[in-house]
Image (cartoon, rainbow, N blue to C red; front, side, top):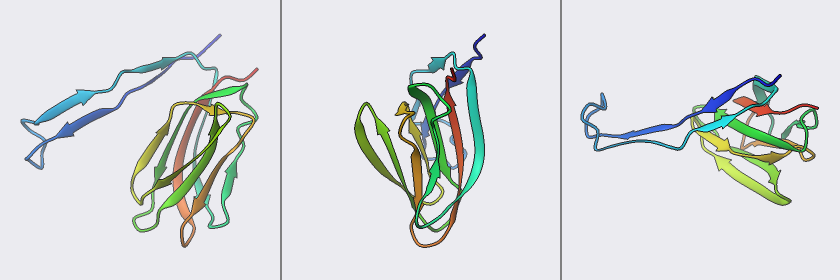
Length: 127
């Protein structure tokens, strides 16, 4: 039996620090899935790169969410999606959403100058 997952993002832009009376208030289209497995962890990412194995999932990982917990250093994310190698710089304190990744190729997170903690949430299907 499948579990259920729903990912939602909400964006507010306001002239006020409490976001009252926002100029823009939008929600992206919801991503609703029926996975049967997930992993949630905080990982210490090294300058040489830290590999998160995705092989426990079937062909495609449905969602990966990464948040850089460091206040100073960026990290670089590397993954494969539909046979395309991707990489993304993730600044300190920011987050990044990967809507799908190929499970046969792992996610690698490489720190810039010193080890950086990142929160990672992976959702997918196991055989």
